[in-house]
Image (cartoon, rainbow, N blue to C red; front, side, top):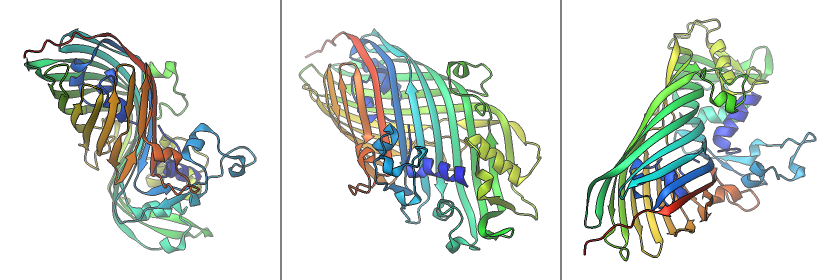
Length: 478
């Protein structure tokens, strides 16, 4: 079960990652195209005539199952500076299960790995209160939602803990999804009401999507028990005797690497459309008055349709399916895991379909922002996941964040505090000229067993983007 444990570690142990919200950038008035992913109407409020995003990269992990407690920090882990005493002779890191601590409270468990690269993008003000933007983005996401503590604990123990033997577990439900895709977005925003320093902005983004990789296991009901392997009394089996589930996957990336040739390959198995739409109310009477901004948006409406096998399971027959730890050794990639599961459940079975849908992480985004003329401000943001647990879609983790900040043309500072997945995170970000660097979870990068900080994830982002020319100052009626 070597690879399954590696996957479990990736999703729940926060050992590697790539952030979807970028609160330090998204809440800044100088965030340009990076603000549009929260609310496309904000394009019309850009302070620059032209904004160019050259590159923005981000990475994020969160979970509510385990806390990281290795003797070295996650920052050391992701930068490759782990001390040699924690490495094997071949240079690989000796990562022990003792480096994590379970949080057992009876609640369903969720875990997300989310990586984004926001490529060349630009925004042009087409009028005093209107703008047009073109954005590009690449996303890679892996996620488990609604998993039971008992199942995760058994997998974490490599099925070897005798306490789990012969104890039936019924009606487990969870969803596991991965999705890797690129998008091209076209945004237009403008004022639909305006006067006396107040305006109501409406914006929308149409997205054209190209998908490269997706796997889904939507489990609507699973009964299992862990039993001794009759062929080897020192090992155990996971015996599944009832399953109501959907399994679907692609194999496009099985023998390909993610390079420009792959990214622009017209044979990519997924294609789709998406939509963001938002409203923003802005109250800014004159240059000496504070700015009040209130927004509501629905983002990532839509999804992709993939070409790939899809299986529906609702009856395993008289013989239960049995999984050994060795079934998952010497394999790589989530598509290989999906193939192993399919073969175990029903060898040689013809797929029920050769197409399946993968929804985008639809969310309702609410925000309120207050900024003083000198640059000090505060933002409150609520992002609500609009997908059901059993949806064949990636989820935007529900988030409530408060971000105090200082915002000026050549310098921005922010300190976001967020409630995410049942825990609090605190971050920090800085922009000097065109360069951004930040994290929405600073303690996640620093925590280890040596300093008693017990992180549940990590978050980091950086980028180069800048505005050119000041947008026409609004004429205020006194």
